[in-house]
Image (cartoon, rainbow, N blue to C red):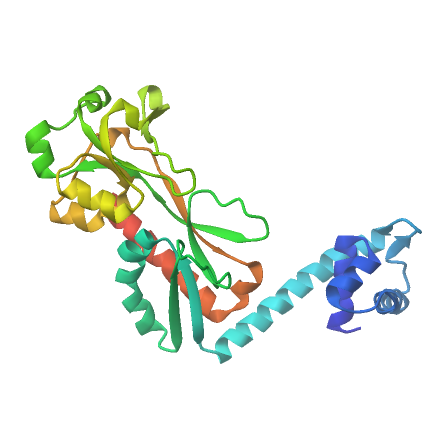
Length: 304
C-alpha cells in the first residue's frame, strides 16, 4: 500500500467515478480499478459497492475514507513544510493591478518586500493594459469577484469619500447635509465599459443606500481617469467621490478635504485573486502574506 494508491482511493471516494478519476490523474481506468482491488485485498473488506451506473462507499469504505483523507492532508502539509524549509522564494513574480492601487498602495510598500525577498523579481502590469498577457501569478481586483475557478482573498474594504480642495470650499462653502450637494459642482467619473457617469452611493436615512446621479449636480466635467479626477478636485473645479486609498497623499497634505463623512459606506472590497495551483509557489505565498499584513496595518492605522 503506497501513497499513490491512497490518493487514487480518496479521489474515487470523492468523485464516485473510476473513469473520471483516471482522466484527471493521467492513468488508465484499469490502473484505478486495480489500485482499489489491491486495497480491498489488503484489508479483506469491500470498500466500494459497484454497479454499472454507480460507485458508492460501503460503511467500511466510508470509515477508511475519513481516516485516509486526514492522513493525506497531514502528509501534504509535512511535504510543504519540508519544501519550505529547503527553499527560498525566488523567480519572476507577475502581478496585475489597477493603476490607482499600484500608485498609492503597492509601490510605496514595494521596497520592504524587495528587501525581505531579494531573489524575487517583480513584474507589474496595469489592469487596463491594452494587451493583458493573461499569465499573471496574482491579480488585485476591486469589487466583487465572481469568476469561477479562482481564489479571491479579501485584503481590505475601501470606503468612498467625498472631497474637494480648500479653495473650492472657500468659494462655495462646505456641504453640511446631503441636501446641500444640489448646489455644488461635481466632477464625474466615466465608466470605461458603459461610457456613462457613475452615480454617487451614500448612506442615507436609517443607514439605507442612497444613489445620486450626476444630473443631481452642476456637473459639467467628466473624466475616465482617476488621476484626472483627483487633479480636477485639487484645482478647485468641483467635488469628487473616490476610494479613500486613491487620495492618501492629497488628504495628508491638505490639498483635499473630506466632507459628509457620516454618510460614507464601507465601500468596495479589494482582493488578491489567483488560480488555486499558484498558491503552491513560495513567491506567490510570500507576496500574498506580505500584502495582507501591510494592508491590515494600514487599515488599523487609518482607524486609529
